[in-house]
Length: 113
Image (cartoon, rainbow, N blue to C red; front, top):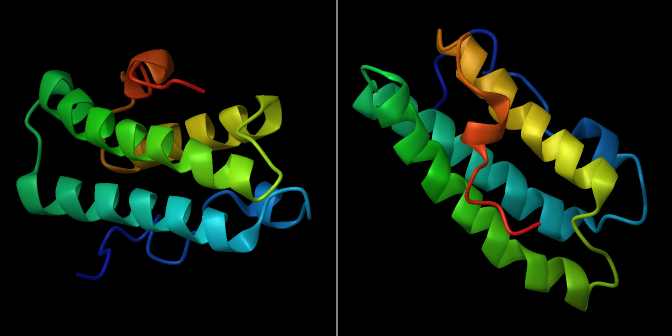
């Protein structure tokens, strides 16, 4: 499925991390895929409220939790800069779909990083 939201269709998620060799592109690509899947699910399921949105972001956050091992194996980690960049991506997605009142911390509440 293609992302139809005009703000996100051509958006490069985690651009700052791609610029830093500390973060391996092949793992970042998996993170980008998680974010694209989140967008696709929001577009397909059209969450009616924040509770429904948070349920979708919880699944995406748990997928990022699973990536932690791959970052470690590549000599990297989801550290402060990465946490902020990933959190910003979730916030960008939420606001692009009209959830300006979403709590940035709640969007990634399931994080282990």
